[in-house]
Length: 340
Image (tube, rainbow, N blue to C red; front, side):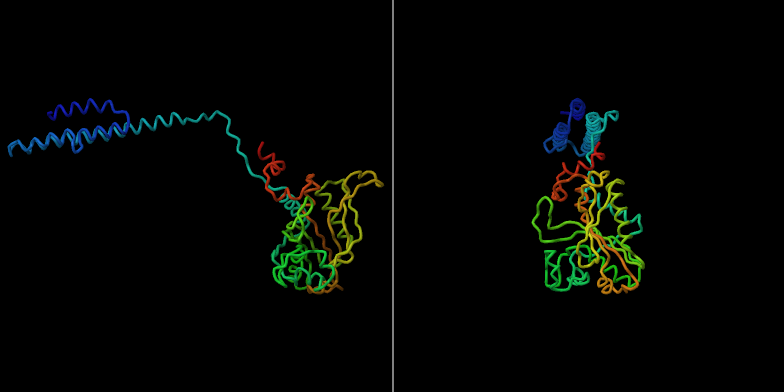
């Protein structure tokens, strides 16, 4: 076959190529080890020395032509494939977008943030401390010396004889009072996790959260405590809510009270329904002394609440475990506005 016929046959076949495989087969047919150009080069040995250079030049010209043509065809096939892909993936921007499901805030975290904002607006600062605490700060600095019977009120997770998982956030109060070096004012809330050996059920958990508050300054009275708690309750549950204080006992406050919030029949003084919401009291003089404050000069009040309890009352949640099981169906009830 002459070089001209090879060229003509190639031009005919290259027009019929539809994909990369056919293009590869065409290259092998003309440029491979057993291809048409290789075969015709074998005839160069029958030529005279004078004819060989011009023959070789012609063969190289045809080879270069085919190589260039193959590259052009490859580019043409790639462009056609891209256009086909783009056409198949065309997006109609006028169609409504797909619904994107967004995450949300756990109702427990919601109520903690809400409580923090309420007290920050009253001039409180937020203080934090370690969850693995010493016996000194968890008990002794709070008027609970070793072997004090009131320690039995809190069944604790001890790590060593002197280290335990904190049973309350009160140790943060003790640490903050020590930082003050006996000079007020101290005005803080202490949110965080606490741990007690308890059987988990609908209303109990071995791990839960607390928010405790502390105010220490000159001339702090019990009426300051009551006014603070009334403002807090109304801010969280509504202006129609009332509070009731009942005498109680806590080793680190004296006097101590349990605080109830009205939960129905607010307009009927004789038939109001009450629910316990938190504990509070005036800081015990011994606690002030151990923290470096002179109880003859300074006084204070403290309170503590469980945000789970507050959230359960506010949102009508019946099982405390719902806060921790990460059931998306439960969480979506409190974040439906984010997925509308």
